[in-house]
Length: 217
Ligand SMILES: [Zn+2]
Image (spheres, protein in one colour):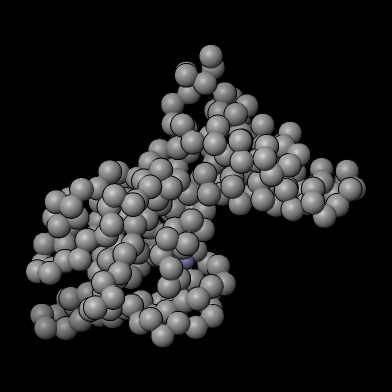
């Protein structure tokens, strides 16, 4: 089987992008009988995917099955068939997380057993008691921990991470300045629901760039 020769090649964000694009095709199919319109949407989706994901010939064959989907059930089966090709987030243990946040004396850990690393682009969780939000991202094959405060007085707005319109709140990170005793703060509006946000990330490089920016002095 060709399947076994293909190694995982999709990042979690790539997978989310394909899912998002598949939904565009499905909604075109549900709202139009015009073959030209559907063909146009398929063309737009094809361009979006091929400009965002570099694919080999075999990988292209797998992805192209998307264009023969005609209903939701086939769409679900298609997504399921891509799962073996998704590169999951690095598996995190409690001790790995603790080592990323060494200075946190009372670090609240995320519910690790509930996490699906196959669907995680970036990991974030809250400590409701202290209003802290913790984030773990993978950058250059290394894990990076970021700590900030999150104001739960949410409003409707655009999330700085996933760029969607959602319930967002102010996320503030403070970094020690170049001059001892000084701090630089960055405040950005991000999704209140980090799980949902993670699901909407379709370009991990933009997410990494965001976290880079807010951890600069
Ligand atoms: Zn978001």
